[in-house]
Image 1 (cartoon, one colour):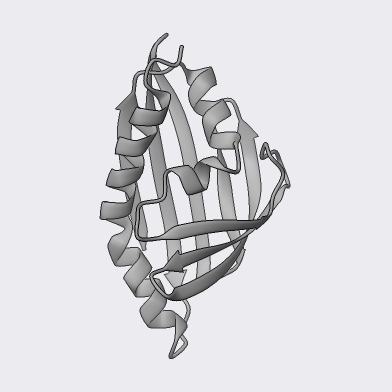
Image 2 (cartoon, rainbow, N blue to C red):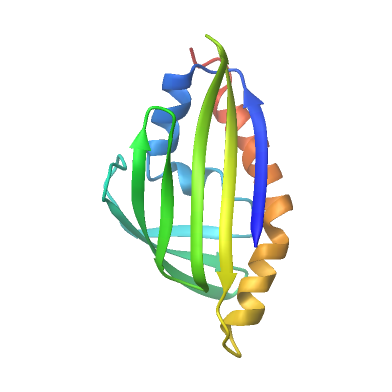
Length: 148
């Protein structure tokens, strides 16, 4: 399964990259009613770092552990080590349009886990990606508005 979303934000490449490397940014751009609770992560994500968190989808807690890979000023990849999917690879990439505008692209590749509980949960998450990433784009624009 593959999913792609992109949007533009009025912020420099360096501000976009710095914002996304902050572990707390994930919770800041997660749409309600989902809630992200970080258990373990450095403040700023770098190559080889791991994040452990719970995403609350309503009353359902979903534990997740990811590693950060391929870090550069143009983006990074988070790869699920433990979580609801058999595989989950999310590439965050940043492309300067001009000095004050950046395009953010999210490319996700995933495989559902064949399990009576995790298959429907993973499918539900997968089906919610368009709405979730639309919200993330809107919220990211708000939070980075005017960042140079």
